[in-house]
Length: 599
Image (tube, rainbow, N blue to C red; front, side, top):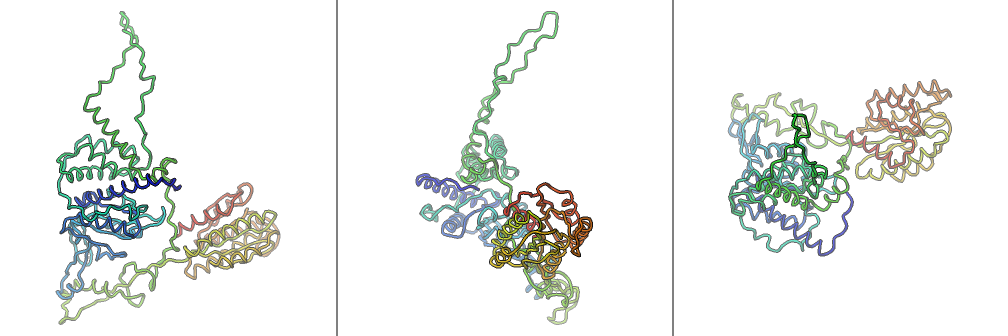
C-alpha cells in the first residue's frame, strides 16, 4: 500500500480528534448491546492509547457484566467447557465445567494478539457469535450453555500480511485503527463515560433500503455488513433515548460499520440520464385509416414525495459512508481497488506430525509405548466410567482403551535446491540469475529459517557447489568461484539435486528443487556426448525425481520456450515457467510462491 502524503498539523490533529471521538462512540454502542453488534476489531499495538480505549469500554459496561480476557493458546475444554476432572474423580460420575465463553455470557471477551488465533479457535468463537450458545459434546458430555457476548479482537499484527481472522472480523460491526493515535490525542475524561441506557428502537423500511444501497455502492460483499449496520442503527437510537431510528442514526451506522468495509469507491454523484432519453420526439397521432403510425411511449409516473425523500436518504447515507473510508484504504481504492491478499510471510517450514516433540496438537487413543502418554486426557477418558467399572475404594480403574497418546506438530526447515545449467555461451547470464536469487532468498533465511543449496552442471558432470546453508557469507564465497561453459549433463544435475533433496527429507526438512536450464541436454549420465541418449537419460532422471514426490520448479531459460523443456517439466511434475529474461527477483518470487504451498 503506498504511503499517504503527510497531513498538515491542523489536518492531522483534526483527523486524530475525530477518530478518537468515533472510538468513544463505538465503546458506548458496544457496551449497550455487545452481542447484537458482535464486537470490535481494534488494530493497534499495546500501549496507553489502546489501554485507554479498553478502560473506556469497561467503564461503559454495566457493573455486573462479565469481562473476560482469553489467554493465548487456550485449550478447548477451557474455552467451551468440558469434563471437570477433579470433581468427576471425586464424585465417580461425569461433572461438567463451564468454559470461558459461557462465563462471559452478557459481557465481553477480549482476545489479545488476535492475528495469531488458530483456525480452530476462530471457528469456535464464530460459532458462538452466530448462535449465542456453546455446545459441548465430548468426554461423555452433551450440553449447551448460553454465551451471548461481544468480542474485542486486539490485532497487533505488523503490515498487511498479519491480520486477524477474516472469519471473525466480518462478524464484528466495528473496525477501528488506533495505530496512528498518540497519548496527546486522547481526551482527558475518557474514564468518566456514563453507563449507557438500554433500549430498543424500530427500524423503518427506508432506513433498511438506504443501508443496503450503501453496502452495494461500497462493494461490501458480505450480507453481514448491512445487517450489522441495521443493528447498530437501532442501538444508536436506543442509546440516545429514541424509539424510532431516524436519519442521523442511519447515517452514523453506515459511517461506522460500512465505511471501513469498503472495497470500491461509490460514484460521487448519481448517474445522469442520457441526453437522448431526456429529449423525446413529439409523438404523432395514428392516421384515420387505423394504420400503424408512431405511438407515444408511456411516461413514467411522477415521483412521490415519499420516494424522493427515500432517494435523498440513500444518497446521504452513501456519501457519509464514503467520507468515513479510512485514508489509507481510500488511497488504495482510488488506485483501482483492493489488491489480492498474498500468503503470509514468516511461516516456518511445513507442518509435520511428530510423536515425541513439537507443539501440542491434541491426543489420540494408542499404546503408551508408541509415544508420550497424555496423562490428563487418559484420566478424562477413564473418569466417566468409574461407577460402571465398580472401582474399589478410591482407586481409579484405567483400561487400555482409555490410554491417550499426545500428538505434536512441528515446523520443518524448507531447503531450496537450485540446479543450474552452467554450460554454453549463456552460462554467465544464468549464473547471475541464480546467484541473485540465492542471495535474495538468503536475506530472509534468518526470519523464515530456510536454507539454500546450489548444484551446478557443466562439461561432463555435475557438482554440489553449495551444501544446504543459511549463511550468506558462505553462499557468496561459493557462488563467486563458480565457472561456466562446456556441455550440458542435465541428467547428472537432476540426479545430484534429487540426492540432496532426499538427504534434506531424511533429516526432517522440506526440500524444493528449482531447475534453471533450456532443457537441451547433450551429455549422458556416463559423460559421453550425444543428444539422443542425453535426452533419454534426462527424462529418466526427471521421472525418478517425480517418484520421490519432491516439489519442483522448472525455469526455461531459452530465448524462446522449448517443447523439450515442457516435456521435462511434465515428466518431473514440476511447475513450468518460461522466463527467458528472468532476473533474480522473478526467480526468487516464483520460488517463494511454491514454498508457501508446501507450508
